[in-house]
Length: 86
Image (cartoon, rainbow, N blue to C red; front, side, top):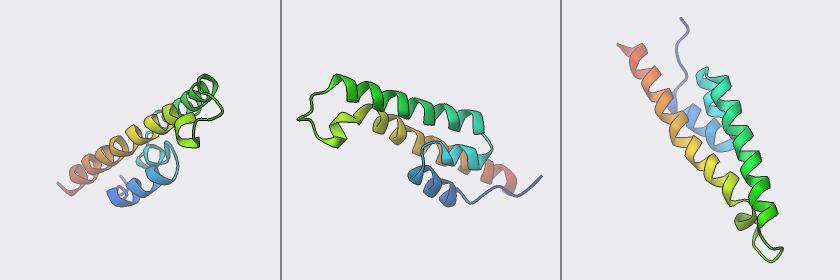
């Protein structure tokens, strides 16, 4: 079994790319689901807001899902890293 990635590297990948941290941990299906929901909710909030709304406001749904995926990927990486150390 290969040594798991450093959780801080997984955290960086999760911050840079939605679902990237999950893919790095080995949970590609979960990472792709997060990426899909980021795109879906960004699109939905874009359609339901007015043009006067800021960029962050127009994409708030997707950004929220992305923000929720970051600690999830980090937590999963920490658990794998701790299990490998034992």
